[in-house]
Picture (cartoon, rainbow, N blue to C red):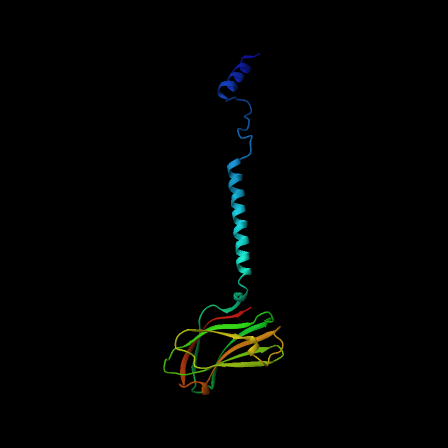
Length: 185
């Protein structure tokens, strides 16, 4: 044996510091990172299943929101006879939806007005409803789509309109706010 080989052998035995090609110290799999990753995945899958099951139980609250921010309908009946806020539904299929929901309020507490709600489909079938005595504070309304009698096909809806008409308002000018316009299943 050569002197260099003896030193290498002794260094390997006592110090494990051989100058030759170092061996990998970690020959076993990294245990803790893999345990952490596996537990993270299991917890994530559990939360995912809980979220899916929670949403399945809320069948009536599934909504298609059309408007997130409050909409200001400013009417002034000097030359005009009505003020319209219209939402283009772009051939939206509402066959699976049952309710139109929204919140509304007027600004002038002395005014007494009614709001006309109108739906139109691609075949130009129109149906309208009136909500009388719009309150001064926010109030939620839910209207069954079956109350819109003149519409036979809900598969391609074109327009949803909220209309303030001169003959349905006590004052000549005012503001009506609409918020949280949505369709519910």
